[in-house]
Amino acid sequence: MTDRSSEASAHIDTFTADRLPPSDQWPLFLWDLPELQYPSRLNASVELLDRTIDRCGSDRPAILADDGTWTYGRLLNDVQATASLFRDVGVQPGNRVLLRGPNNGRLVVAWLAALRVGAVVVTTIPLLRTGELDALVEICEPQFAVVDHRYLDEWTSTRFNGTTISYGDGSADSMEVRGASASGSSDAVDTASTDTALLAFTSGTTGRPKATMHAHRDILAIADTFSAQIVKPTMDDVFSGSPPLAFTFGLGGLVVFPLRVGASTVLLESGSPPHLLDAIDHHTITCLFTAPTAYRAMLSGMKDHDTSSLRRCVSAGETLPEATWQAWFDATGVKLIDGIGATEMLHIFISASDDDIRPGRTGRAVPGYRAEVVDDDMQPLPPHAPGRLAVQGPTGCRYLADDRQTVYVRDGWNLTGDIYEKDDDGYFRYIARADDMIVSSGYNIAAPEVENALLTHPAVAETAVVGTPDPDRGMLVTAYVVLNPEFSPSDDLRGELQDHVKATIAPYKYPRILEFADALPKTATGKLQRFRLKT
Image (spheres, rainbow, N blue to C red):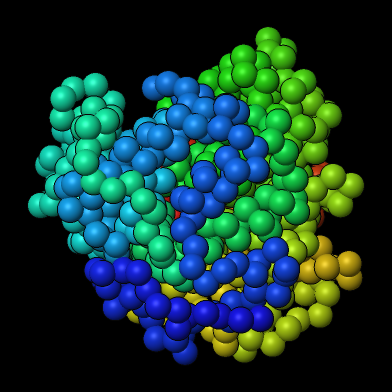
């Protein structure tokens, strides 16, 4: 295992280097696998484009999106032109370039061009509003912003005072037109493999967002571990999915993984379940990335769509209920690949595929990573004992100037905030988020277990379970249920659902309070916000 943190940086602007946590607060990085022995000088844009073209050719389809189609050759040309534009407007290595737009081709062009000139990319979720954007601007201090022309109104209301470049409307001032006549060099900056390449923000659902720093080599590492070992893509695959590219689950699954192997990706500005089904049918998608709730929602519309092209379906972002896994397998014959990842780790680090999948288990540590279940003193726990999930690998948490570094990293391990147990075969089973355990009358009850039991009832479309304070029991298990369209709320149905849970899992875990809801609160990336349901 090695860490080449002393490599000479190509960054002129040392903003990110100056805001790294102290090295004694870093996790231990693992680089043991032969495929992770990257050279000391590395630019991720060059690896994902130039080197892929060297292996696979320039005429292969790369991107199909609402704003156009790109072969690998056209993509490289547009990235080089945009890199020239970035140099013309003064982007220097280490500068932060903030991107704002939906999942489309020109957003990817800007992302790759920024990496090419040695900038640090900050991709933002397009649904963010002025106040939320101001918080990100304050944290990462970007000097440049590249914004889809349809999202300029909200952006111009922020406190950003740098240079904004718009794209997508074909005007004389647009990125695509200005890039075509730019005079700056399109040569890639000779970045160190350890130079920061991107700042990825956590969801920020419970407080001030945290910016996580990831290097050029990290971008390749997630492709050469999880994607290569679990997804196992080929150049003939067609990727698609719903997560925004600001969500690292989406960045990996929809950009990095396909480009690494010369495959193609279908980018959807709207990744709702109906749009996903249309895309699968129309574009013969083979590798799909979305959240458990979307997989469940697609089931009702599958009879009108051909989904036979699917061979890899990856679920992450929230826990995958076993009931959803089984329903998807019954409908498609495809085994859902479950995975747990984190913005701090960049992508998925525990998973399984093919015959290694065990429904109800997340999987085992992805090759290149190792994981343990530990107690509060960081001591490993025996099999089947629930505890805190601790992870090490080629990626890891380094927050940008944030005191919460010491909460996430302890004794060289990344602590994800999840409660897991590990069986004798090294398979990890998700129990709950550390703050989602419900203690009622002395019993520890995991909210996801109750949710899974409810989801096996035909009336339930979605559900969220939380603990409600109670003077007698400490907490009461409380369920919020969204019904399928053919069912209506009633006291009889409430009692039926409660009895169903009693018959499915230990009766003491049943929801003593069950409320019907029209929708559940979620983040812009589709994660359930249980904290908003707690009273």
